[in-house]
Length: 282
Image 1 (cartoon, helix red, strand yellow):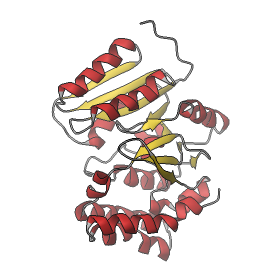
Image 2 (cartoon, helix red, strand yellow):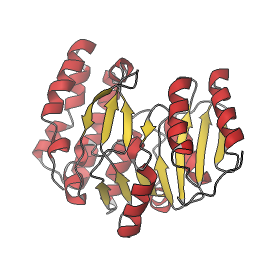
Image 3 (cartoon, helix red, strand yellow):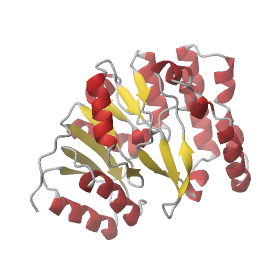
Image 4 (cartoon, helix red, strand yellow):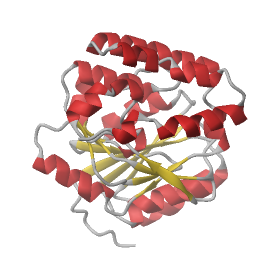
């Protein structure tokens, strides 16, 4: 197949591991490679994976040999390590994150690239998301604050949806990349560090990804994960000098993690009605 030359000078950074579902992975790659065509997609294979996932990779590699760069890590070392490895292989200044189970809007890369062209001071740009379930059906909209000032003030809420983010590669490398000491919430910790360094943030007005939310999403938020998030949040709000509300708010995931899954889901639904990220004006 003849590849068209991309006018999107962007590297997309994605990681896949054996726990990812082949059909969702296929949808994710399709939404990037077929619907928009970046100049480069860096796919990090984090440890051994099943043949069904390998088949998906082979199919897209045969269609897009010059765009899809497959980087393999012999043993699974976690998302932070995979992203740090992949980031070093990204050839372009602008890097868009993407997860192996989400779906990118056909205009996502174009819209985000234009935002960076218009605002030279911008370092990190995310977007709202449309939540979808395992079958791909819409669950609702995940709101985020738009302006740098609102994002900074609400940094304790993790006001950036990680797989929606595009950032300047050199700025993330200068910040030290993703912390490999953390098993989860590496993005949360990274945004705090970047804010402390004076980086400029923004979110777009319109959702640019469909974000997969399943029962497993709730089950993954164990007490140990919530406690880790609490420690990251407490350190971060102290570093940024955020107020009492932020210090109290970072404890919410711990409270939620103590509940059984059905109550956890109910509390999440109720909390979303009062989520300051969706109500922020910017």
